[in-house]
Image (cartoon, rainbow, N blue to C red; front, side):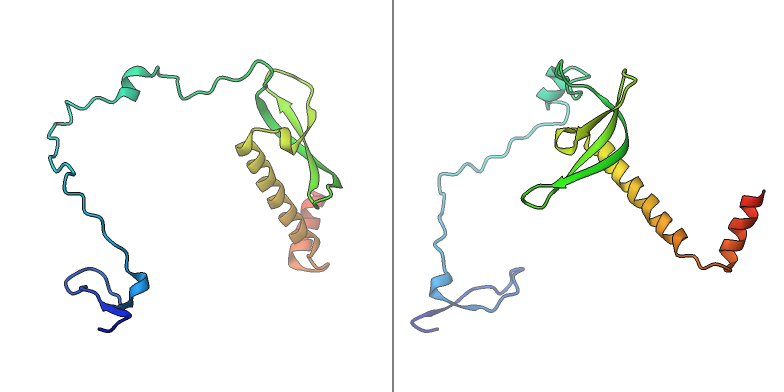
Length: 152
Protein backbone atom coordinates (compact mmCIF):
# COMPACT_ATOMS: atom_id res chain seq x y z
CA UNK A 1 0.00 0.00 0.00
CA UNK A 2 2.77 2.38 0.94
CA UNK A 3 6.17 2.64 2.55
CA UNK A 4 4.82 2.10 6.11
CA UNK A 5 1.64 0.12 5.49
CA UNK A 6 0.99 -3.43 4.29
CA UNK A 7 -2.20 -5.07 3.02
CA UNK A 8 -2.89 -8.48 4.63
CA UNK A 9 -4.53 -11.40 2.86
CA UNK A 10 -7.55 -11.99 5.10
CA UNK A 11 -10.10 -12.89 2.43
CA UNK A 12 -11.55 -16.36 3.03
CA UNK A 13 -10.23 -16.56 6.61
CA UNK A 14 -12.13 -16.36 9.88
CA UNK A 15 -10.43 -13.08 10.82
CA UNK A 16 -12.55 -9.96 10.65
CA UNK A 17 -9.88 -7.26 10.86
CA UNK A 18 -9.01 -4.27 8.75
CA UNK A 19 -6.58 -5.61 6.13
CA UNK A 20 -4.17 -2.64 6.16
CA UNK A 21 -1.69 -2.51 9.08
CA UNK A 22 1.50 -0.65 9.96
CA UNK A 23 4.77 -2.48 9.20
CA UNK A 24 5.79 -2.33 12.90
CA UNK A 25 2.93 -4.75 13.70
CA UNK A 26 4.15 -7.44 11.28
CA UNK A 27 6.14 -10.42 12.64
CA UNK A 28 8.09 -13.03 10.74
CA UNK A 29 6.51 -16.46 10.63
CA UNK A 30 8.95 -19.29 11.16
CA UNK A 31 8.50 -22.32 8.97
CA UNK A 32 9.50 -25.73 10.31
CA UNK A 33 10.08 -27.89 7.21
CA UNK A 34 11.53 -30.83 9.16
CA UNK A 35 8.60 -31.03 11.56
CA UNK A 36 7.09 -34.54 11.62
CA UNK A 37 3.68 -34.88 10.04
CA UNK A 38 3.00 -38.58 10.68
CA UNK A 39 0.03 -39.38 12.93
CA UNK A 40 -0.07 -42.29 15.34
CA UNK A 41 -2.96 -44.64 14.83
CA UNK A 42 -4.16 -46.62 17.80
CA UNK A 43 -7.37 -47.79 19.35
CA UNK A 44 -8.74 -46.95 22.78
CA UNK A 45 -7.95 -50.48 24.01
CA UNK A 46 -4.26 -50.04 23.19
CA UNK A 47 -4.04 -46.91 25.30
CA UNK A 48 -2.35 -47.32 28.69
CA UNK A 49 -3.06 -44.81 31.42
CA UNK A 50 -0.03 -45.00 33.67
CA UNK A 51 -1.77 -43.09 36.46
CA UNK A 52 -4.59 -45.63 36.65
CA UNK A 53 -2.24 -48.60 36.42
CA UNK A 54 0.32 -47.53 39.02
CA UNK A 55 -1.59 -45.56 41.67
CA UNK A 56 -3.53 -47.27 44.47
CA UNK A 57 -7.25 -46.63 44.95
CA UNK A 58 -6.91 -44.25 47.91
CA UNK A 59 -4.02 -42.23 46.47
CA UNK A 60 -6.12 -39.07 46.21
CA UNK A 61 -6.50 -38.90 50.02
CA UNK A 62 -3.72 -36.77 51.47
CA UNK A 63 -1.85 -38.13 54.46
CA UNK A 64 -1.87 -35.81 57.45
CA UNK A 65 1.25 -34.94 59.38
CA UNK A 66 1.44 -36.49 62.86
CA UNK A 67 1.02 -33.03 64.46
CA UNK A 68 -1.93 -32.06 62.22
CA UNK A 69 -5.50 -32.60 63.46
CA UNK A 70 -8.79 -32.77 61.59
CA UNK A 71 -11.33 -29.99 62.12
CA UNK A 72 -14.83 -31.26 62.82
CA UNK A 73 -16.71 -27.97 63.14
CA UNK A 74 -16.20 -24.21 63.52
CA UNK A 75 -18.69 -22.79 66.00
CA UNK A 76 -17.74 -19.18 66.78
CA UNK A 77 -15.56 -16.27 65.76
CA UNK A 78 -13.94 -13.41 67.63
CA UNK A 79 -12.03 -10.44 66.30
CA UNK A 80 -9.06 -8.74 67.80
CA UNK A 81 -6.92 -5.76 67.00
CA UNK A 82 -5.87 -4.66 63.54
CA UNK A 83 -2.47 -5.25 62.02
CA UNK A 84 -0.44 -2.31 60.82
CA UNK A 85 -1.72 -3.09 57.32
CA UNK A 86 -5.36 -2.79 58.40
CA UNK A 87 -6.17 -6.51 58.49
CA UNK A 88 -8.31 -7.58 61.43
CA UNK A 89 -7.10 -10.57 63.40
CA UNK A 90 -9.85 -13.20 63.45
CA UNK A 91 -9.87 -16.28 65.64
CA UNK A 92 -12.26 -19.18 65.29
CA UNK A 93 -13.53 -21.61 67.92
CA UNK A 94 -12.59 -24.97 66.42
CA UNK A 95 -13.94 -28.38 67.47
CA UNK A 96 -11.42 -31.13 66.67
CA UNK A 97 -12.40 -34.63 65.56
CA UNK A 98 -11.73 -37.05 68.41
CA UNK A 99 -11.31 -34.33 71.07
CA UNK A 100 -13.89 -32.78 73.38
CA UNK A 101 -12.47 -29.34 74.17
CA UNK A 102 -12.63 -26.70 71.41
CA UNK A 103 -9.79 -24.20 71.02
CA UNK A 104 -9.43 -20.69 69.59
CA UNK A 105 -7.27 -20.80 66.45
CA UNK A 106 -6.00 -17.88 64.37
CA UNK A 107 -7.42 -17.70 60.85
CA UNK A 108 -3.95 -18.00 59.31
CA UNK A 109 -3.37 -21.34 61.07
CA UNK A 110 -6.53 -23.00 59.71
CA UNK A 111 -6.35 -25.29 56.68
CA UNK A 112 -10.04 -26.19 56.37
CA UNK A 113 -11.17 -23.77 53.67
CA UNK A 114 -14.52 -25.43 52.96
CA UNK A 115 -15.61 -25.46 56.63
CA UNK A 116 -14.43 -21.87 57.09
CA UNK A 117 -16.32 -20.71 53.99
CA UNK A 118 -19.48 -22.53 55.15
CA UNK A 119 -19.24 -21.03 58.65
CA UNK A 120 -18.75 -17.47 57.36
CA UNK A 121 -21.59 -17.86 54.83
CA UNK A 122 -24.01 -19.16 57.50
CA UNK A 123 -22.97 -16.38 59.87
CA UNK A 124 -23.61 -13.73 57.20
CA UNK A 125 -27.04 -15.23 56.48
CA UNK A 126 -27.95 -15.17 60.19
CA UNK A 127 -26.79 -11.55 60.47
CA UNK A 128 -28.90 -10.60 57.46
CA UNK A 129 -31.94 -12.30 58.97
CA UNK A 130 -31.37 -10.50 62.29
CA UNK A 131 -31.19 -7.14 60.53
CA UNK A 132 -34.43 -7.89 58.69
CA UNK A 133 -36.19 -8.69 61.96
CA UNK A 134 -34.85 -5.61 63.76
CA UNK A 135 -36.31 -3.28 61.11
CA UNK A 136 -39.91 -4.44 61.50
CA UNK A 137 -42.27 -1.70 62.56
CA UNK A 138 -44.33 -2.16 65.71
CA UNK A 139 -47.99 -2.67 64.90
CA UNK A 140 -47.26 -4.31 61.56
CA UNK A 141 -48.80 -7.60 60.52
CA UNK A 142 -45.55 -9.51 61.11
CA UNK A 143 -44.96 -8.18 64.62
CA UNK A 144 -48.52 -9.22 65.58
CA UNK A 145 -47.85 -12.74 64.30
CA UNK A 146 -44.61 -12.84 66.32
CA UNK A 147 -46.49 -11.74 69.47
CA UNK A 148 -49.12 -14.44 68.95
CA UNK A 149 -46.42 -17.07 68.56
CA UNK A 150 -44.66 -15.84 71.72
CA UNK A 151 -47.91 -16.15 73.69
CA UNK A 152 -48.32 -19.80 72.69
